[in-house]
Image (tube, rainbow, N blue to C red):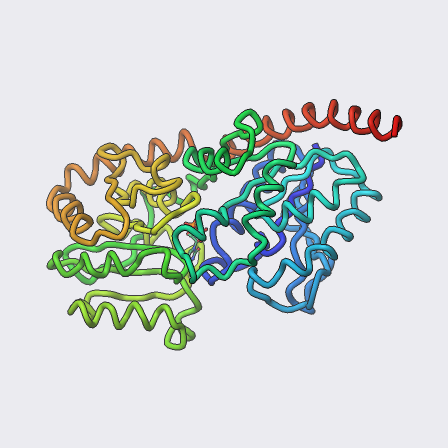
Length: 409
Ligand code: UDP
């Protein structure tokens, strides 16, 4: 299959951890590579956000990244990209007129918009993965949500017009149904993990206290790091290491980093909280392995790759029971679920787990097993291929019907 992967703001070549670079970048990179391993050819279209980027880069065997000129060739916050999606779509249209893919897979709502516009004249099937939904973001972030005001309405249209929507978790299926997407047009395909890179054996970062908690994510309020900091007050002999955000040297100027440090000082735990800033993918497994538990307590989470990475490393995960975390983390088997934004309950769950090495080991082993068997990228790529095959078949009658309707008008 010739697959066009569209990821307007999230380049598979970007460094992870900064405000607009996280799970989606990784998802696009790993899925493309795994599809290429299955023998497919993948072209990833992402916005050209620096002057020195070549138009085409071979990212690995069978995967090419195309930097699409759409708006200024510099970094822009993703919430400012909508006005440039028309230009992005024109590029796709011209590209696909010259070189027709079999299927288009759009990531995030703006890619869906550009893809549907670009694919319109070519009768191409479009598979949509939202990664995050505007309705959910608005519900949780309220006035803090800086998404364009058109987002929610456009997402609904994209969901309804895409040939097929690939949700990343079961919770998203309910949200999509509420938006009017037909249940029959939704498939669930989760994100994955590399079980060779993320494995229990190997280096372990040194610890500075009898117990260590690790939490990883972009430094944005909705990741809920402050909940863990508050819980730490009730967890003596325990340190918390937080990875993510800008590179370490730029951490002092980061507003959210400062807010978290001030929060730690107010809670009287500043000496036990360490912010590492952005860390490389190569360093991530050793950091996760060094934890007695990896803690993920976001307000909401469209999927959440970090818990899978921790599970693959054989580390128990204590997670807020929200979004994708209710699918990946199995309460009482691979870790524990807690309600979001409730430090006392988090502290209670962690206290009992930290006091019980046998249970931690059992959760870790079950987590490794689950991550390897259910979430390895090769399996995710096979599931995705089946979704593409279905979309290709589903697109045919519609295409024929559209042509017939056009001919009779
Ligand atoms: N990550 C990283 N370095 C960092 C912070 C995060 O490599 O400093 C990676 C992390 O290991 C995971 C991804 O970025 O693979 C974050 O994905 P997730 O789905 O957990 O969160 P998102 O950023 O998409 O909200």
